[in-house]
Image (cartoon, rainbow, N blue to C red; front, side, top):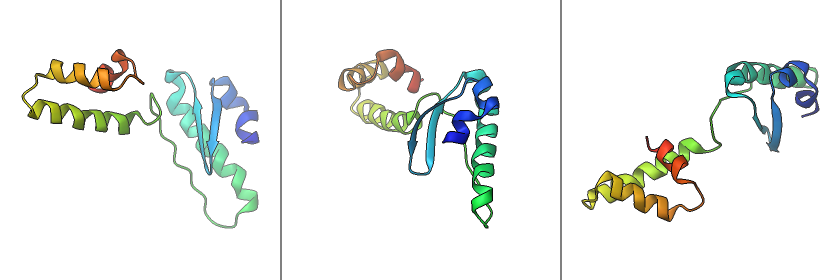
Amino acid sequence: MINIDNDEILNKLGFKLLVTIHDEVLGECPQENANEVAKRLTQVMVDTAKPYMNVPMSCDAYNVKNWYSDELAAELEKELDAYMKKNLTKEEAMSKIILEHSESTEDFIRELLA
C-alpha cells in the first residue's frame, strides 16, 4: 500500500487509494485515466511482491464506474423482470424499484437499468 501511495505515475494520473480489503485495493481516479491506472497499479503490485516471493505473481485489475454496480444492476434487472411479469409497464416497475431502493438515487437506478 505504501508503494501504491508513493508511486509518482499513479499520483500524476490522479489515483487515490481508498481502502484495502485483504489482498485487494479499491481506489479512484479520473475516468479518462482508468485504463492506464489499471496497468500501472498491476505493475506496482507485482513488482512489490517480487523481492519477497519465489513464485510467479499476478494481479488482476478492472475498472468500474461504481463499486459493485455490476452486481447491483443484475439484481435490479431481476426485480424489473419480476414486476413486468406481473403485467406492470416498464415505467411502473421502475417507479416501484426506485421507491424500494431509497439507498440509491433515481438517476443512478435509471442509469443502471438503461
